[in-house]
Image (cartoon, rainbow, N blue to C red; front, side):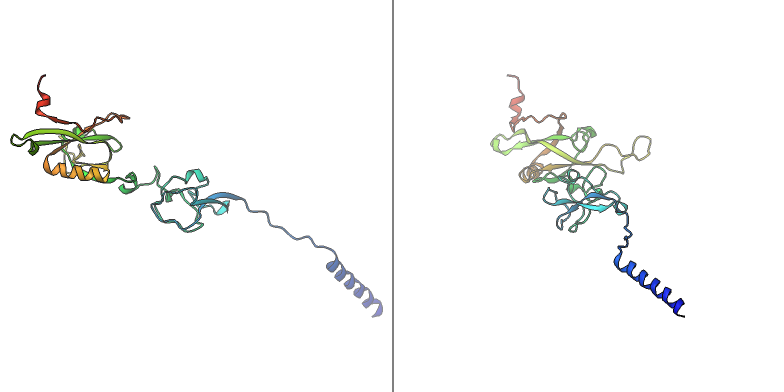
Length: 236
């Protein structure tokens, strides 16, 4: 037994010594590949115009990257959020107002302006050629100018210049000559006006008639609010 136990005991002591004193290499997992994504620095409400102070970049595992994640700060700054964002939430393209996102009209109204709609006909609305993004002037005609008492005279003037067309409204009940029920022309225009312009045009529409004239693309010239009367039409 002595000759059997002694080698076994020595072998056990050697094994313990090797395990205790010799370093055993640890198995290391392969590093996970990451990519930079844009995240919100703070909770951000919907309809917020993002600035560089609202966003930052963060490393995110590529294998778990959400579809449509924004990876460049320049693609987020200057865009408006269409949904609220939580702090450190990854910003997706669908969170931002862009050409691939269907937006409500309120997202298209310039800051400081209001949307105002007007009923139009083929003659008052440039025969249906006005489209969203165009610019129009509004002409107001008053058939009987009480300021000309005791001889009231009709007068006409431009009350608003270079108004942005936000939308056009079409009547789905209008049918073409072949009876197919296709949309033809439009029945209303929605414009972006300042509060003062909206007040003036609302009153002008109650007192007289409004006509919309289409501006050439890129024309931002000023015609002024000169008042024209019948006398201005007479030969000199």
